[in-house]
Image 1 (cartoon, rainbow, N blue to C red):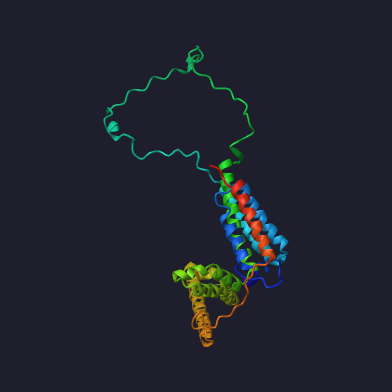
Image 2 (cartoon, rainbow, N blue to C red; image 1 turned 90 degrees about the vertical axis):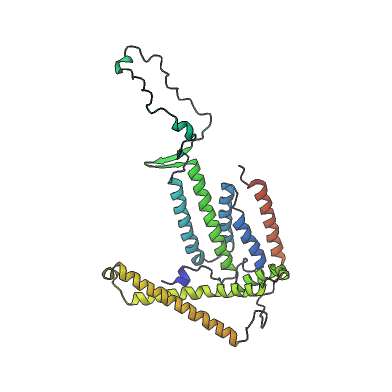
Length: 327
């Protein structure tokens, strides 16, 4: 099991360099925020369009199949599973809530102790003698004016209605958009570019004495620390596999004890790595974020950045004009 290859969450794709790599990080951050905000209060068609747009961006960037196949494959499987689960679940419209207390307790307390007797039921042969001629007959089934049906499909005890299907599509597309747009952004943007772009965008906050540089440095170290966490966890899992432990003979209590020891060891290794990184930075003179700063990337909006921002503006115009859900 190689977590660094099978689960590349938050990792940067260095090769090949696609057209998305060449965009300014601030431009890609604007697109990311748009993908995160556009699904809210949007129609189902618009949310499906966002999913198709993300897939189109991945295909057009020519990202290798080995990189995004497992990410998009597992995420698509998760979204389909959640969507099917919500679709077959009861939609809640048939539930009639009953009040816990009567509406008027005073009237309820003044009711007589004995209830009025029920009217006597007519004998079964009264219908044969014409006694039921005055009863109301069942209304005939009239043809529907449209082809609308609230119940979309029914499979045994499972029923898919218009409400449950709409809710399933909304949640599944929202989950895919939120997770995959973030993964695609981290896949095509280096951690130094992300922090440089955020620091440039947060520059006006310096007037309010907010430590923008410290925040950017902390974010850079956090993004660089993600592969170390995966590597340490991977090494611990491999060390357990090499010992060929028979989990059936251990029992539940001993199994939990083993995994608690593994979690403690993982925490100790991560704290040791963090201490080593801090010592290395301190020896090299990085005692504060403002000293010995290294500019990794030069932020400059180029031609394609302005084109992408223009497309983003048109996207938001279309979203506000046709994609907003009307109540």
